[in-house]
Length: 250
Image (tube, rainbow, N blue to C red; front, top):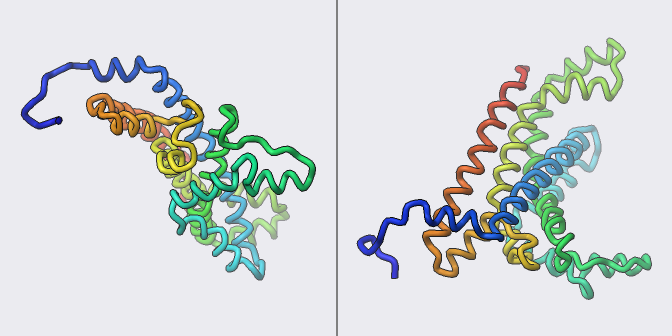
């Protein structure tokens, strides 16, 4: 039993042990890959969806509700649902592929595919928040800018490149920072879908730290939390300052 009075100083022993573990190296690689891919897909897909939903289409309010729906559902519930959809023999995805004569893969059992399957689920869930942020940014752009550009003969792509993209940059920066930090500390979706498996294929820093806590290695897992904190700080703060420096005022 761990107490506040019964302890001994071990220096950096827990950090050395943490970095010497094979699973830790895989965890750091998976964490960075997961964060970069989910952040990139959310930033790009949500911008496209937001531009569609701010255009003069009749059903945009219904579509906005559908897009935002995944965000009001528990992450654990989404993880369990998609685990069922991705079952190799009884899952919805492979059943649909079988109708077209395609043998579906083992989405969560293949070590080369499992992490990307979880990333796909994370993007599906997280794109809704990014879309809302983009919609707020797009609606804040004065319509007169587009009218002036149209009078000057600017096409749709030119209006997007020279008006929309620069003036929605603050929203893009917000989405990138939130998505990146969320990806770096992700745990609940991975745990509900794969528990870090098969093997260590989908383990991230957070899931490795949880396993160490669960097995009673409190010092080791605390060292892991410190490592994760510094990893997020080292990546997020310089990126935030860089993105802020490129913003323009409306």
